[in-house]
Image (cartoon, rainbow over the protein chains, first blue to last red):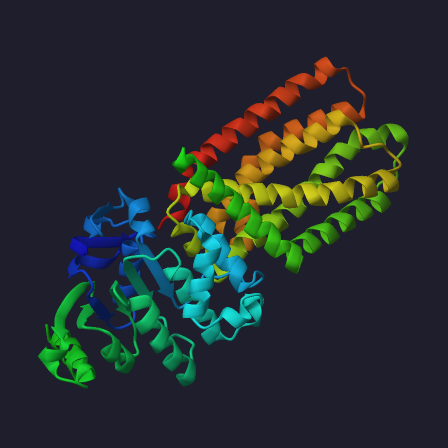
Length: 236
Length: 227
């Protein structure tokens, strides 16, 4: 579903991604973990067609980036630490706006479905500025799945959420956003990440330094696996 | 046909979203209006005007007011998109990005026109002059179109910088000079009751600048917003 070969991204003289190879199979949930500045967000922005690769090949859902960007975007849902919502519009108005941007047929029915799924149907006509951070993030998930994308990108979705809101978001991510879809997620919350993902790739110094599944490191051992990979990287 | 429809639908959606949010918050329009009223009030007290001088300076005062108020509006309009990541939300939509540009340009133009509709009668009363001439209104419309066309593009560029509030006027004013000069000259022509054949060249220039600026913005917007 996602294939990346020898991806390089430079900002001026600074090279963020250094010949990165990465792939995700259909229906897989891959967590991309790594220290700050490793290039996780930059990489997700390239997958989302928000940034142009300097070199290398990026293929998402059978389409080449940046050439077929519009086709990729049609199949992509993005949830980031920012909700990407307009606070002076209601939840319904926000979703209606995005529905029109994606040219969805019968958008009102789909909005009803999505609001039910994320548990915000009763607050549908309230301004987003009156929502708590957790509710905004749930609505952000609703916005991201509105057009029923096959690939989801989560960029630090737990940032700024308290424990209760994070637990609620966990449930919505699992049942609404991730079910039946291919997912790439970046997060610093390793405990939640371990619970959600099926594969874990460590991004360090612009490259995938290691890749493992639950079977490789055993349940509850993601943190020690992650630390081990970073220690190994420092020695080299 | 379907593609054309989705393109027009996206333009309409962006413009509708901006207008709906602004009608609710009134943050942008109130700032533009208060600023514009203050400017014309200050000019009214600062300039002791006889009838002849008044006709000569009115176009300059009007356009200074519109341009500075417009800059406030442009900055705020794009800052709203940037601050909560909404610009990314727009850019993730599977439409040609020029649709986003046209949607934003239409809403920015609408905000300018709303301010102008309110300022013109206020100016007419304060300066005891008639600004409601069809020719002058056409010039104001054409000038505002040119201003919104370039301003929307450059505000999308400046909003990516840390010093966006300062950066927009620095980028915008040198580029907008041709539109401003032609708009001031054409407006002055109507206010001083010059013959139409003396105003026509300025009007033609204004239309040409509008077309050029819209075409350039249409072509480069995609590169301006992409990292």
